[in-house]
Length: 517
Image (cartoon, rainbow, N blue to C red):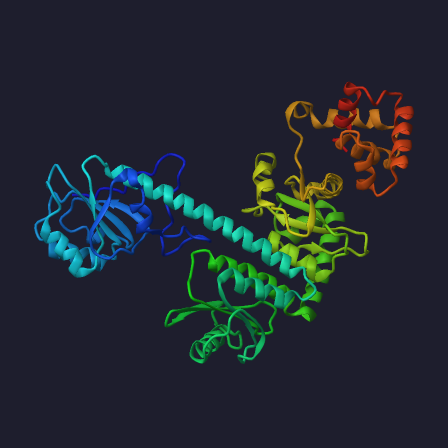
């Protein structure tokens, strides 16, 4: 007899990952109390402890479902083959089941007393499922609670990422990141040398014994010998301990202690590890930043056949331009922290105070080979690039290496638009709609002919002015010139093109042409 499969989750939901290899952050377990609080299910705990955490829902009418359980299940059964409750419960406990839901009728009029006693004795929560509640309704409720928990955890990780990135941009970035990390995890964060010497610390102090255990754990990951793990975890009483080796070759370790361990903590700690690896070793970070900056400048100005071997991928890639929102210039460390938050090490902090930070961001899954459909990925890429606290960003649409130079110009245009409209992020989307119906070669030829009378500065001004719906003030802000200068340039464009720029048809045609360049 084959074991019945787990009920199919409702449309629009995703089954939770296996606990042995969860993606980050994994789906948090569902407290049993949350399921019991769903009044429409009518579930009632009649035996066993009140606290349990649910990872799965599984239905089985086998006399011994042990071989089919992974642990953490809410097992649902009507007791069709129940003959020895004590043995049955013992096997469930041995398999790691979280709770048992017993459906009354049509097999049993009530929950057998021997089953209630066995669950109480062996510490397994027992729920009475009323006849009017189908098992699939319970499965749906668990999937819904898991989806809500997952959403809460993702929001928490996103907020933590933004808070850590903001801390990394402060004048004292390392202590600021540690302080923010300790606050996010509700514990203590310590930066240690390979010998266990404290460099910086934040959060409440630990008693001597757990503090010593944390130092010993840090030595496990300190990269003084080959084969050291990158991370390690342990517990000391009720305190959860973890340690992470930082990059940079200095043997620095991030050590954490907290009274609780939530599913997204490892992801939050991983973000901090990336930031601290950039910030904690400035003498090495400066060299790496210099190499990355030189590479970005070369990639954005080199020919495609020179770029592809260096990147190891034909794309797609996104070019991002960024400036500090408060107008302060960015240095290599703050630019590196921005790159870490966005998930790239290819960062150019700029060579002058007025220059934007430029970043090259790989699309997830990009590998050497044919270019995927970049336009189909544009929306997903826009969602992946998130606003960063303290920064104004302009991003190009995903592009192959053959168009990185054009993407660089599009990112600069998007940044100017973002600054003018005071929005934290603007993504320059690929050509779509009616414009996509015109063959690119014909569109480019038409654009060159139509715009031939304009100089490059006039064309840039006209493009910016049209993108901002003819606003003189916002165009002046975006271009960094006086509004009267904008008026003069737009007037000159109208004269050279012999066109009425107040005419919507004229504006639409010019915008189409300017989008080709």
